[in-house]
Length: 232
Image (cartoon, rainbow, N blue to C red; front, side, top):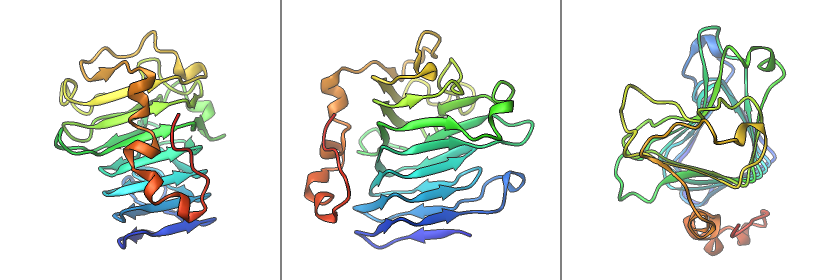
């Protein structure tokens, strides 16, 4: 099943979205969102490749569970995921897993994915193959791909390199990826890739990617009644 959200100020609570095509069908979106000021609270999105297409506009996810294999959170929205669980599923035998593929195509666009106080872990069927089918935090779908992971727990399924190229050297100098104050075996940055686009950020810089600043969330999220953290 595929669901598309278009209208502004859409809100979903306590509901699931699933694409049952399975890993063998490759790209199979469960949920596509083009709704500005959209909110998803305590929702579940399940699929394999390309589960959640966070296409565009401002999106806020709180206490959600999102599962998949390849690029399972992708798109070019301005999105903040708070207190969410990102679960890697077992892929096909010849596949590796990538959590994100953010698609910012112009450095002037105020888009990007922010994961704050989230947990990245593996499903039970993935754990036996985690050494063979490694998991990466993200790869650059477009030239100025931007993803920030902060204050989160990264399980040991994350490959030491952290991030994966899309193709050759494409976007490695122009992407914008950062990790800030994460914990867990997968958060160790000793062997992370050294691309020009990998950033080391301070608390002041990280604050710019919180929901209160990045989404101007104070103007529209509190009125929904959904739990919301404005800052760090």
